[in-house]
Image (cartoon, rainbow, N blue to C red):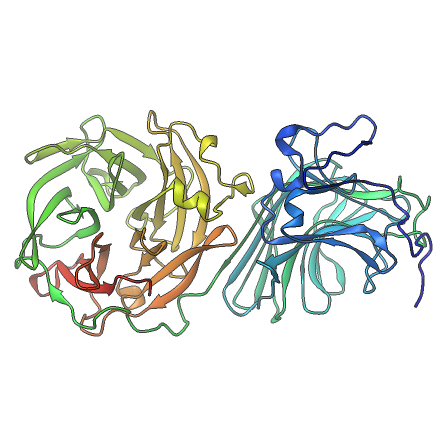
Length: 559
């Protein structure tokens, strides 16, 4: 065994270490820690990480795992910043290193609960987004790594700063892509990796910088400060010579690839029956949402119409209908999706049918009363500037609502902050988030809507695995968020569940055997059970065989 210069078998670096509720008797000079962020876990969501530190025994540095990590800090190596805006990761050149590296690190390693994370580049989509600033470099060999994908044996690609030059690496090519030659210490930037289909993509501030094909398994993400210097390559050999990174936000998501993977059989009955009178709606019936066991809301995209349907034996019959207009009474709102919430009836619209060539991606709120007629929106949120540009006919297609109580209980991550979602951060948004599905890319976007105005904040986004998403349905009994695709995906649906803070695909189902490959744009699950089954409704935009509604079922237990 070789003992490296500056490292002995004992701890050589001083640190203020705090575990649990214990207070440190001595703190770093001039440093205070706000009560609101006593630990790094108060700033970043660290549920699926462990921290590797540059302290401990030679070739055996200290690793801190959950649940200890939740109430741990080691100042100055791993601690919240004084203003609680980030977590400071510092590794000095004389720090303890692992047996597999000659360089010290203060770095998070991805886990999957209590197990180490391990994933493949050829299965699913794996994303890490780090909002960070590199704040200090070691002397001499002034280099630090600030985020990486590690394989089963070695790093695969990293964000690496050398002086003022920031690179994305590929394997042993440490200069694979120069991102900028003028990085200034302390500048906050966003580093992002997306791995899918055997391809690695690296982004800097939202702009794609590098893309290369590589098949690997046993991979995991790392974030923090990995100092690329030691006492052999940098002087002085002291704790005052270090690399440092401050991480302000950190999000990791993993989504199973829905399209192209073998889907399983529909978990309900194979048989499906029509659920409307012949030509009751004609073409263009789109989104569906149960308001109660005896009320089904439906929207038509052209002309924009809201229906309140009631049961009539095995069928659903319109009890009232309303033409849909914007808040000022103008237009013909192309309503594609609908959801009934405690705050009213909300519709997802992709354009004004009076101006069909212009994208107008909005969420509208309506307050229908008794009788039929016309409705002007009582709330209007224009998401067009925030969403990817889409053809006017491939914009927002789906909408659902998920209560805050469910999101917080299941550890949902606010991708805007990189922390656990806190409803109090969005005053006036009601008691849940609105999930809008985009037809053009199959992605879902979660929003906190200011119900007292027109403002909104995007809280998260995630892939469904489908090329297009046509409807979304949150099922409270199972906690599934269902995503439905149309005939583009042969009528498949997928369930998504919160894993590691984000919704990820948990299962993909074929359509029932008894249903043809219709252009189904609506999907709703009844909120009550009968005989161990609950009804499922599909709406067919094409009104095939003169019917726009069909019903099947699901078991009342989670499939």
